[in-house]
Image (cartoon, rainbow, N blue to C red):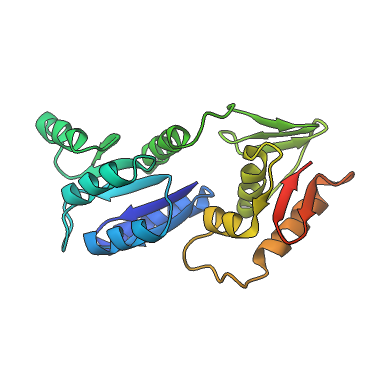
Length: 218
């Protein structure tokens, strides 16, 4: 799942982004409305975490533009105002959910996950293919009934491949959805991650390389 955090308090924005990365999200950050709109014009995001009070272009205007132009991107609006009228106003602008400051990080994560599920086509709560089973909520992977310990990135790559339901996923798509905008497109990090993922999942191999195209789960 790819998330854009837009918050003008840089320490808060960076802390939220780092926490979400530890939860295996691919996260980009913008500190004002102009930066948010620039990134939204280049990258596809499942969820936008949007502070309502922003410099350059305020959060309300960003929300209006995103809801009009990018209906598949779900918007979680943040604000220090918690009155009912403020919440209603934010939702009326096109926000999908609303969270007042200060907030518990665990609640933020839960809301982002819920919005991410709505942003994508419906998928079963547990992803299975052959003897492979991945539970996104519990962050667990089993093969043949045996638990497989994966790193955050290995888990995220496997989840993207399983969500494709046998279709080929390109290297570019995996880099975009599992890492973030700062990833070097010529890096070998994906190849190394796929190699270790194959080793951990064991034989017979289930992650197949489609030469010149990408990867798929058999």
